[in-house]
Length: 357
Image 1: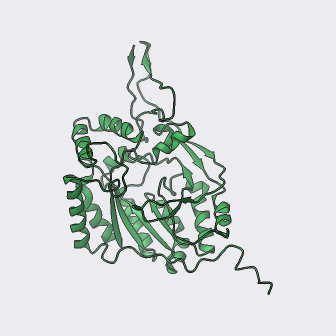
Image 2: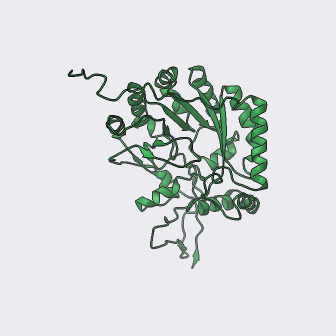
Image 3: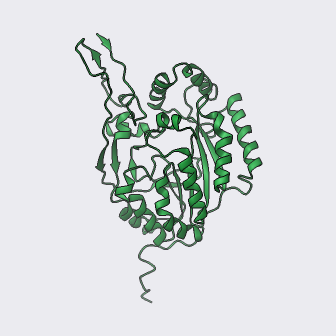
């Protein structure tokens, strides 16, 4: 029998549900000759409550600008095929493919847990990053409001926060964010990968359009919230030609700072991405991966600090020069991004409690 190739589903980024790297068996679908429905059905989304003992994740990586983060959701319905967080579903015995974007785990008790952790004697105030793995404003947040609850805890205790998102839903919380920003305690970075709706539909199927994200960036800027743009990931022959246009449009919308990240393909993501390329860009696939490997020392991915975000070699250097030239021309990054304050932090419970002596 012949193995049946997987087919793209409308509204989903991954083509297949490849086994995670910890699984002992691999499943394949074979053609037994019987009549079958060739039209792929869209896998429905499922949501699960995930009890957690802690919500703060510590980080000591030298090439990311934060020491602690919160991810209210595990998995992401946005379905971005390149998402480097896809392999985290393997720890749950699930696939980084369709499982990652259809089986979403929600940390419903995150706001209460955050308040507990902020009140610990061992806690030292530093900026909390959100959106470092999965998007805190993915579709289910509209109903769950976990991110909203976290921001309300932070606002009450003057805890600084930095958010990265692709979603326009962030504008719903501009009241809380503006309150924090007024005291130098909040910033929002909007990730814009492409201005092409056709590309967005297959690359990031359940995200807002690039123009909608720019409109959200403008709305946040007008509300007094420091905003930036992240052009990420840069994918050779797919969206790399849009760098200047994205930076120009974001600056016009009010972005104060900018950044970019080169495509990362850790663990299962490299196979899922190759599968996506073969499905949507068969004639470009070889060229895309050739340039990716040129910027990764001949590999699909590297994990070394200093290289994993930007790459190395001629192509990576060309991207650096283009980014540097355009940001200087547009007035980006001249004074770096804002430094959020940590000296206003209020320990939960302490402000309300009168001293005994």
